[in-house]
Length: 141
Image (cartoon, rainbow, N blue to C red; front, side):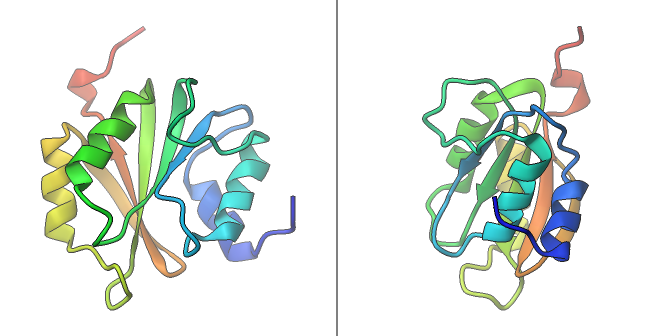
C-alpha cells in the first residue's frame, strides 16, 4: 500500500473505521480519491469490497455524481449490504465541480431510502456525508 497524503489520512480517520471493518465501495471510477481509498484500507487492514461482495459491511463508500442514475436506488442497495450499525459514507463532488449533486436531492433520496444524514464535511474535492439508519430502526443486541 502506498503512503497516503495527510489530508487523506485525516479524512479516513474521521470516518470512524477500525481494524477488521469490512468496507464496501460503490461508484468507483477514475475520479475517486485514491489516497483516501488507500488510507481507509490502511486503517481497516482489509481490501475494499465491491457491491457484489457477500460479506456484511460495517461501512460503504458511495462515490456519487449527478449523472450516476437514481440516488435513492443506490442508497437502498447500499443499505441492504450493511450490518445493523453500519454507515454509508457518500462522497459527492463539491459545489462547482463536475458531477455536483444538489443538497436537496441528497436529502430527499436519503429520507426516501429510510436513512438520516448526520454529518457532512469537506474531503478534498468531495463532500463526505454520513448516512445512517435512524436509531428507532436499528436492531438492538
